[in-house]
Image 1: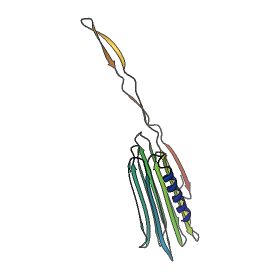
Image 2: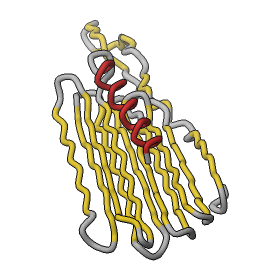
Image 3: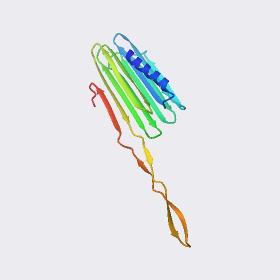
Image 4: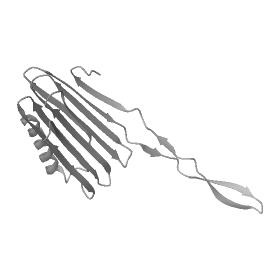
Length: 214
């Protein structure tokens, strides 16, 4: 829990310091802990940084019932990209704890980046699940981790996808002269239709830990 909180704090501070240089970026994180004889806890963060745009960030935690829940949502648009980040975590008194994150950035230049992550903490008397990520003009990232004690098992997976920018190219207009009656000639523009280069194949990067596999 403390390690994840430090990760979230460093991410938020870095974004605040570089906000003026970056375009828009949305980021969230969520964590939940629960178990037998343990007071359930939950936390969440949400942040959007952009220049000249509009953003929305909201968090919610619930530790009153038998299932602790943490949720964070951030959405924003700054004229260059639409950025979305959502993270959630839940941990029941009995049963596995789960956390997941989804992040997406859609640029006005056609670039799309997405990422997601998930973790499942099983076994042990106390279980913690944590996930977070971000999306912006730089791309999309995700992290997911967990902890169980004593014993137990944690299974985590993260994926990220990025599509290239779509470049539009075309032919310049080429004047052409044709003969008409009464020895009169006029230029006629012969314009070829524009061609679209792309989209090229999407690059896929994956990492896995435990039993989810590739």
